Image 1: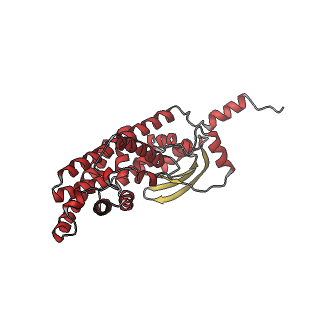
Image 2: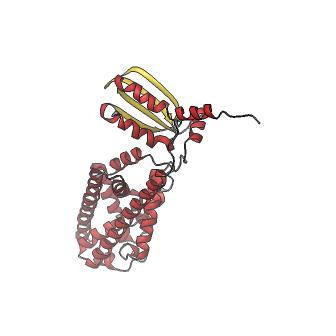
Image 3: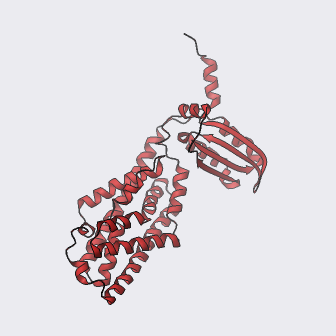
Length: 326
């Protein structure tokens, strides 16, 4: 169940409530007249079955709600309502499988914003990956994978392609390019400092590393794992169930590969740079393609799900064919 909150000028209120009241996906509807100060107008609240939200959001956008006011969408984690249960049953599809595209787009923009926090997490994760490579520690590699924030931007590429959002595509690509560039530069400088202090030698970088050799030796499995992980990650981001994201973060070798590229640059180990650079590209391309295909499949599936019925059509159907008792 989702809560829609619409803040609009008074002249739009009747049309907005008509759209909401006519849908069987809406379980409760309330209007607070004169409650809004900016814009001056009314506030409308509606509880909506998750699987029916896209149709209503599109209809509200057609009314110009996003231009004249604000539409907020919030998840309702717990609800006890007979009407809510009936709305969920009446609306075609499953609430857990439903993709609310407005939420997905908003999260994609948030996760792809190039800011100090994003760059800090990227740099810290890559630094930890560099230490993991020097110590040949799989535990630290996993820690770096979990800390890296890049998956949101990679998933945003798929959202941008499916929804044809050129601005989002540019924002996500910029975040990835600048984020990895800054993280590699910071880690390379740290590697040069460690080399000058004698803490790290070339043997630590190019010598045998059985626990972390996968970072600089990409193969077909690297691409397969990236595709599977990205598909699972996108499903977690778009559905009501998000439990699979932590598994995605420790499945792809993006941040560790970036860390090895940085150390290879600091020590002139060009084989490490080439191998890890290829690993990084393979993982990013695999994830971007898988995210795009998963979202495209979800859109295709949900396009075949019937829209929620309107109360007016439902009432006409009952009146024409009233239920009989056996």
